[in-house]
Structure formats: C-alpha cells, structure tokens
Image (cartoon, rainbow, N blue to C red):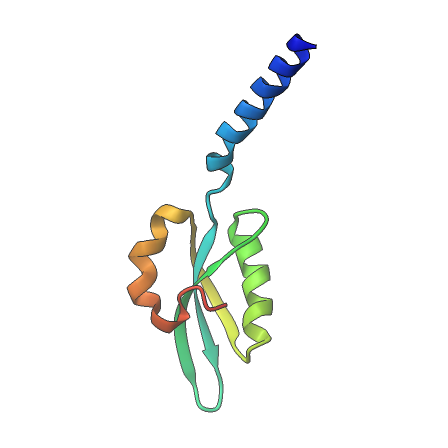
Length: 97
C-alpha cells in the first residue's frame, strides 16, 4: 500500500510540474475591415486549440464576422512572450475578439 501511495504522489508531482509548459497561451495578431464606411483595425486575439495560423484564421474569421468585421489576414501567431509588446498597437482591440 505504501508503494502505491508513493507512486501516485510521484505521478501527481510530475503532472503538476508539466502544467506551466502546457499553460502557455496562443495568440494571433490580425488585420480586419468593415465596409460603409471603410474602417480598418489591427488587433490581438487569443486562439484555442492548435496554435497555428490556420486555426487562428478559422477562429477569428468567425468571431469577427459575428461583430460585422471581415478578417483580412493573420499577421502572426505567438505565445505569451509576444503579448505585451503588441498591447499598445492593438489599443481597444487587444483581446477584444
């Protein structure tokens, strides 16, 4: 019984140690537009699931369209480290969509 408890504690410790690596966020910066009148914006949004440009494009096209915007392009996909440097450029569109 003591051996099983020790093994379970070891497994739990390794599982929790791996959490910070999995907790890294995925974000994309993008450009979008609205028509009549023409309005453009640059923004940053969080992406769930696979951290890829294709996944970002699929998710953001839907989110933006639901709010009357058309996705023009994904500029880049990045993790938590690139988030703060884009905050001021995105302004009100920082993590808005």
